[in-house]
Amino acid sequence: MFDLTGKIALVTGAASGIGEAAAKTLAAANAFVYVCDLNEANGARVAAEIGAGKAEFLKLNVAEKAECEQAANKVLSEKSKLDVLVNNAGIGHVGTILETDEADLDKLFAVNVRGVFSLTKAFLPQMIERKKGSIINTASIGGVVAIKDRLAYCTTKFAVVGLTKSLALDHAKQGIRVNCICPGRVETPFVKQRISEYPDPQKAYAEMAATQANGRMGTPEEIAASILYLASDESAFVTGSALIIDGGFSVGK
Image (cartoon, rainbow, N blue to C red; front, side):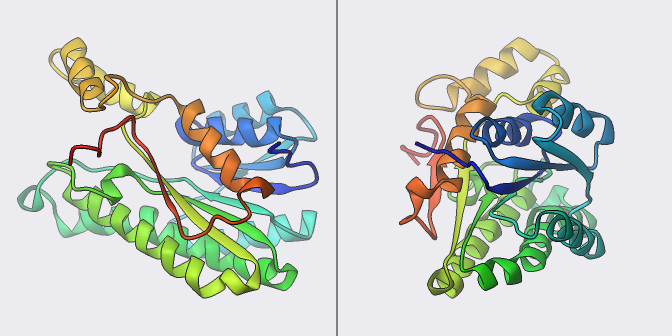
């Protein structure tokens, strides 16, 4: 079950959190993984921890179209194919529309939406040629229901869900599967850092955990398990899905 032997995968935003867990989980299932991130030190660490011959770090800014195309050229020249593309890189923003500048919205769109668009477009032709490929986009529960004071973030994550469904419909008959995951609050290094900045971190943590129906935040490994499923042949009949993994956050909304 979930054996990725012989498959080549690429994960963006893989230097920490969900991306790091996804890279390690896919590698543990025997895929070769390109660990992509802007953070060179942490990205190289993740690749080294996976092991030589099993992973390679690739510095990549998904907001730059040229870098996405260069990444595709490198991977395809080295491995001749890409089986699994995990578009996980993303950034956040806190604020209502009155607290959000156009520059804030543009920055989030550049990474969260255009990054997915550009990297997918760079790899898709070879997937179509081979009539096989699984593309997994990291959206958010904020792409399914609105979250207070997260206007720009929710706007971009709703866009990721729409982009996912459109890609899936357009390319299903060409053998390409496109799905997205919609995590609730996950205890990543990024979230921990934001919590530490609150006047009362313990209170903030408890309040964030309580937003899930099961009373806790998720772990990166729990989210990575869903990515492994969508990357595997066991999910061959799954495309166009927005998989909610939120501990019940959205159940009552």
